[in-house]
Image 1 (cartoon, rainbow, N blue to C red):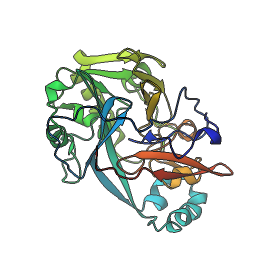
Image 2 (image 1 turned 180 degrees about the vertical axis):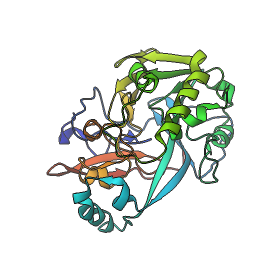
Image 3 (image 1 turned 180 degrees about the horizontal axis):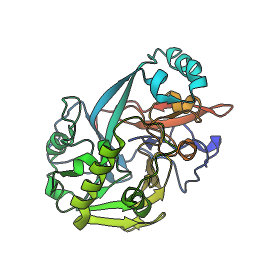
Image 4 (image 1 turned 135 degrees about the vertical axis):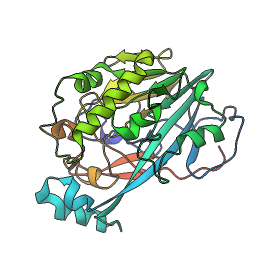
Length: 325
């Protein structure tokens, strides 16, 4: 785990989202990517409000919002432990946030490394059709990337807002992409009775299991199974096990030269709550105690720094939007 001195405002993390300064996950290397000289632009440089371009060293990168969703009664129904819900509500209202109208963001990281095109998660896709999400395909078209151009898909975990955009029915939506996933994630969903006994989620768990298994069946020809610490693309990307939200939740370290960035996916689900007190958790976490140790899911574009403010509490300092990249 980095010390407070290592986390400084000149450093940056991608939060698709999160930053990794929370409780007990030891992560190698820098937590962030310094701003770097621009490389060549994508052939279509048109701007859209849900596409944000940046760089990791010389690697072209985009934070794409696949959409958003708002939870009514989020604190009073979905956050745990219940005894601390008044303090959670205060943490939000102190910053002008509404405790029972909490918006969560679905961020997708896209990378171009020479001829390789990488997406980290794929959003909802066609699942639960709604105008508020499913924007990834349009965004990729805007930056000049066709589905067949994608060579690697990195799956953080198998909830629908992450795996849903990789397939539709029995069709693989990125046909030329190797889909990378941890063995522990496959094992959890393939066991005869996946264990949700520690989770507080109340939605359709049988339906969730069916969706994930159908997804893995469809993606099987393209799946590449990994263990913790595996590297791909000549070491540019390292796969790191970060269990808790799911058994096989993965985070990804992207590195070019001295610059690096961590993609942390659902290490946490709100930029105030899980930083104010990392022991607070949402009902979606499969294994809450593990999740507390591994946390974060921040507002789009999900780039910024986690700053310690003492006594085990942190705050999120978002990167200012840059229009010149």
